[in-house]
Length: 96
Image (cartoon, rainbow, N blue to C red; front, side, top):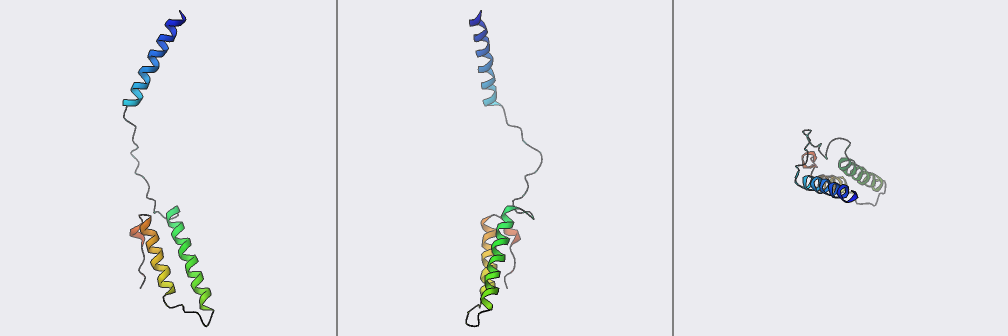
């Protein structure tokens, strides 16, 4: 009797495993949110880097001997590179 029960359970398990491997996964109809929305991690990382870079430029400007020509433009270019690396190209800014 025990053998019959084990055999039946084994057949049920084998059938469910076969179904699980061939069944199509359910797909959500809700669109995947963009990784570049306001407040997203990608945008926060780039914004924080941009702010830090500009803070360095501002601090260097206090030194009379510092060469700060192009400092903010370099920060802007780095910001745009950061956005492009994270597939947020539409959010790049004009550095002129």
